[in-house]
Image 1 (cartoon, rainbow over the protein chains, first blue to last red):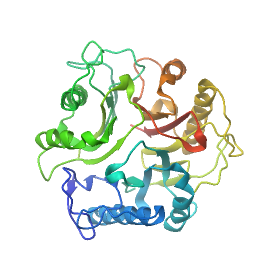
Image 2: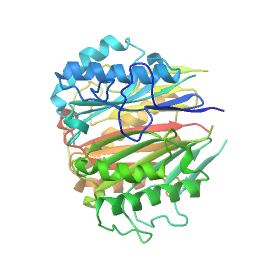
Image 3: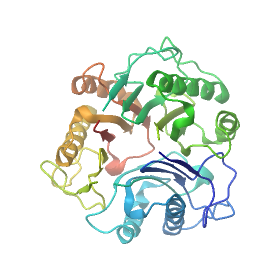
Length: 128
Length: 128
Length: 128
């Protein structure tokens, strides 16, 4: 019986896009596509590892603001500008999510990402 | 305790694809990717604003047929053929969804969309 | 009150990616993007029909391991390496899902798929 729109919060990018960073409806939390964007809403280019780290930080900041934890992520969608960089993100990924409790996931290469970024991460979390 | 498949309805494209326009399971409504396609199932090329407007009309028609309202959209996925047209869709978007109550969202550029369309919009809605 | 991570099961690819093939939270099941990958985790190139058939087998194997049935799929996301092959997948699709009870769906062409595969299929299922 709750619907919450997360538009700001600690660590979350303050950008001009007409979105919520996350929307919570009861036990579900939909997190917007996150990129390597800092709290001022500015895209920060970097290596794939740097960009993915920052994008994950934004995903987790959105979850925290929404009252969710990364262990509750059920599904992750990762779009790459260059899919050959998947291996480097997998190394990061294995540190972020413990074996046996990893989200379902899909990955693909997009023709272009916002800001011409290297990686975009979308997450759906659910409380049981 | 309900599962409903929306295959037709007022304003919805009557096309030959083997899909439901929307599927409702209890409080969740999954809307199929909608494009600038008219009620006869014919793709209508236009400016990005025209195509996005028609695609949103189809999303909203699917929601209405499913017993949902656009205020219940939690998540939107927008694929562009040319991501540089995002700004024009954002202007439309701000008029469609009131500030502070906007869906979570992801945007990206696809290599190609059905009918070589300019924009495709997917939505997930949830009742609280 | 349940959260289950499906990492293996009859027919499921045994691959090295840091993912769950499916994650179940209560009545929802999120299935990872599936490709034409065999039980040994090896990509099997083939015609679009062959690749799509194997990808669907993997989706269904994940659902079965998760305690779900293909009739409970609410939403499917299909990415193509060549969208002109949609028609061939539609023919398969019509045989897999009975008219009037088909999932909501979105399709698009990605710039590149894992293994340079021809098709990737993601599914979300829900019990009512």
